[in-house]
Image 1: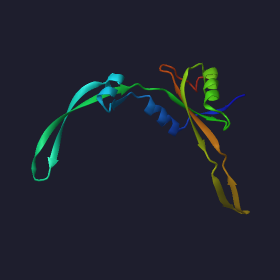
Image 2: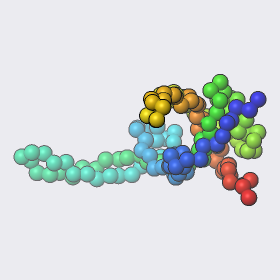
Image 3: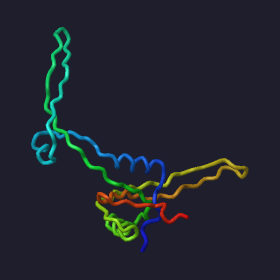
Image 4: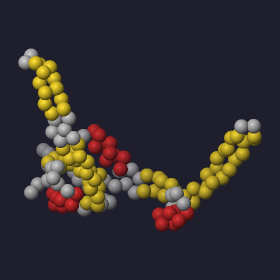
Length: 147
């Protein structure tokens, strides 16, 4: 049974993909976490300003590490599909390794418009979106089969 309805190639989804495809520089909260993540210690100096007292310069040790980029792709899927089924289908269709699947449910929206016949009421369909994170080095080319 096919759970994927269509790949999501929109401007908003492209922005999510571009944000996730850049290495991020993050700070560790404490020294124990820094050791686990392999963070580097850096000294940062800053100025403390107090009312009625002279400014003083202090130094603080900060632990920074880089989080590697991950490729993320969006799909509109059937509402009854679960994360395991989505991951299996993406792996089967595109020959990639899926690391993580995040799903979002969107409710159907009511809509109405005025026409010559009067007020026409209806609604847009509810749908489910899946954001799939791939293993490092894997990618999906949605435009490869277009001629």
